[in-house]
Image 1 (cartoon, rainbow, N blue to C red):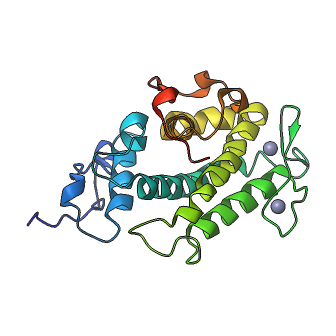
Image 2 (cartoon, rainbow, N blue to C red):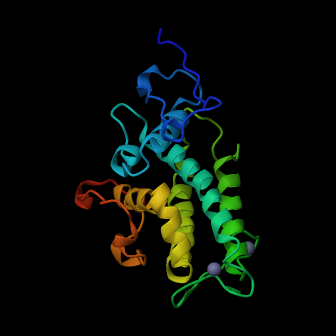
Length: 224
Ligand SMILES: [Zn+2]
Ligand SMILES: [Zn+2]
């Protein structure tokens, strides 16, 4: 039996030791939420290592891995919204735009036009609600095949948050990306799981603060 480890920062911890607990091998994590915890640990340990974080480890269920990656992205995006909030207001951004593209908010029974910040909050809330829904994702052990399509839809909508921030709030984008590498992680997910074609990726790859490994897309299996 592996020894149980308590993963928390102790009082008086030095800043450089913050969250630097050792990464536990996945097969040794026995709790129900092991995949989620494992991904969280990797992000805390080195958020810039997107290849390690995103790629499905050997023996892991691909769909379950993707599900947990996406849930983690939603969690981390909440921190981005906190930074964006003072900059992205109803008067600075009355519409959800990225350059000339205008996006309708799908967080309503009928898609409607929301201010950029409302769009971002509604999109994130509806993505989180969907991923936590008992109806579409009833178990943490396997993903129903009919729910797989939601991964791509959610990722595409979340991508627009980065697009808006890149084109309209560049400083906030960069400040957050340096620390979190969240855009790099999402971009690598999009490429690795073949979610969007390259010409739909409006944010340039050099928005990443870390080098993305090349992916041979011809070898990837797409959901659609
Ligand atoms: Zn804005
Ligand atoms: Zn809305």
